[in-house]
Image (cartoon, rainbow, N blue to C red; front, side, top):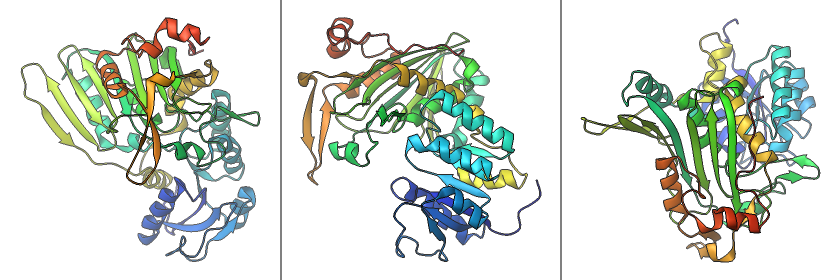
Length: 400
């Protein structure tokens, strides 16, 4: 591709909520002369204050019309999950390169439609897993490949976050598995802590659909929602290793999510939001390191200039989408019994639900590669699950 000399015209679809982070990043790159905000796709136009620093971009609720009128070369899509497929297909039809927020789609079939459309159009697509822009990912994989911790035995991830009850009322689709007949799959593993899943898969090197042999889920909810807020997934790779993720939005004391690579002679812990790595191995003292990070929009622009490969192309998220599909097709999450959780109120008056003992369970899961049921959580045992008509091993899928 030829070098880009003028600021690249971009359109942002979804500029509020999480999209505000993309807006700020576009502002940063506009100051450097790399991009120009040509248009914003929002049902309610942004205010002058929200567009401070931008030269009156075109605004419209019609994404296709906006791409046509602005001639945008790149579109950023940060809209509700169930809209991703349609908007990605529109971008491909217009020959517009794409940065698509995670999860890229609410089902594997829709993900395949996006991947096929992008391939047919010959456009570039980047999936918004920012953790995969961390230079620590390559550093950890190199350590594993060099045998720093011996043979890789498995990978566990832990995510103990807290979201108040209002979080699940932030949008009509929040906390839903389906909405008006459309898949949404807004669960803890597939949206808030999706980075834990994708990062664990990346450290193992199992990012393609064909790398996955089987998936087993344990899905629960403390909140009065349709989707899961406290869950576990066990991913078996074709190499026979297990990648596990235990995640909750009902933590007692919220902490930084992390991924642990277990080896025969040590372990590597990666706190992916901090780009921090800790190596612990037999016969050596612990070694901590911090790493840089490449912004995914920067990387996409570098790719269009012919200077870099895409960090997160669609094909590198196919294994993650197999997990999304496993969650989507699993039995509905089991509601936790009232005695398993309680309400807590923060200083601002926000009310959240706390699952008793969940922090320890999440940590133990990452250490042992076991799920809540195997760890003895009363609400996750086979008998407790069967009483609620929810099979413990629901949601298994193969890579085919």
